[in-house]
Image: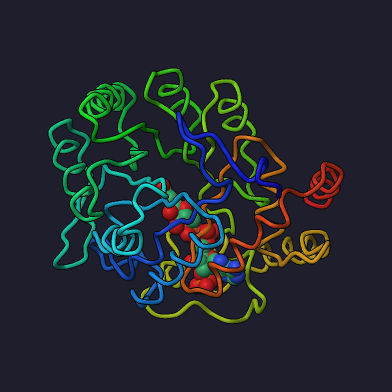
Length: 325
Ligand SMILES: NC(=O)c1ccc[n+]([C@@H]2O[C@H](COP(=O)([O-])OP(=O)(O)OC[C@H]3O[C@@H](n4cnc5c(N)ncnc54)[C@H](OP(=O)(O)O)[C@@H]3O)[C@@H](O)[C@H]2O)c1
């Protein structure tokens, strides 16, 4: 990508067309039934080195959430960017309630009172006085969400956040926030295995950033060895119903076959599979900012390296659509 095309618009800011997703670097945490909600053990020093390597390679956008590792992800990201706060754009999320001592997600809270507590706790963990993007992480009814959007407008006026969004796959939720003055993005699932035409169109119509979570299909679109199982307290070992790509820690046969069909085209022109998957998203819409997760410096380097290759060509998108039909 050229220096012109490797940038995307996020509200009044320009950010790198690639963001980094900091869920995995929060380490293990669980729901009240003991279901793993993280990606297993991680080493904070390695996570910090990975974030710094990404910054060296031109990545300026980092996405986290208060609940990832029940606060640990925000603390690690804050440590990694300390001294360079003005060089990066940071997004976090609220809506889940958790216990940091037991590393347990205990529920949700959609009140304005909780929002006001949550933002201050997030700023404290990140070691910053403002957040660039604050995202609603849960799914209240639309009227309750709109009251939270109004409260986010107040947070903007107070200088605590620069913009807000709803992290949602429901186009009616995304539409409810679109057009409000401080709403600058939608965070939603999108990958070469999960197109999201309605939300892409909405982002284009309203000038919103389309922040793409799960761009590597939870690691499936990076895996060289499909038989290597995820282990330990990794959400993929005991996949909840919504997680469709893995079963018992390994990719399902159906999804592995789809990746096999796409491998040649995604790895064209010297790309790795993960780099090809990110190239599909950049080609799909000029609003997309994929935020792949990462566990180490090697993955950070490979994913940031996708910026050099840039978007796939339109005819490659057409070919991929034909292969997935
Ligand atoms: N509701 C929400 O708001 C929500 C939900 C989900 C995600 N998100 C955000 O979106 C981000 C990305 O989504 P995600 O983490 O679910 O999934 P993802 O980006 O599709 O997959 C991330 C995983 O892929 C593997 N990986 C990364 N780079 C790789 C590479 N170059 N080669 C091979 N494998 C690689 C790593 O796991 P292994 O090495 O263990 O395979 C990594 O943890 C999250 O970190 C989070 O910030 C938000």
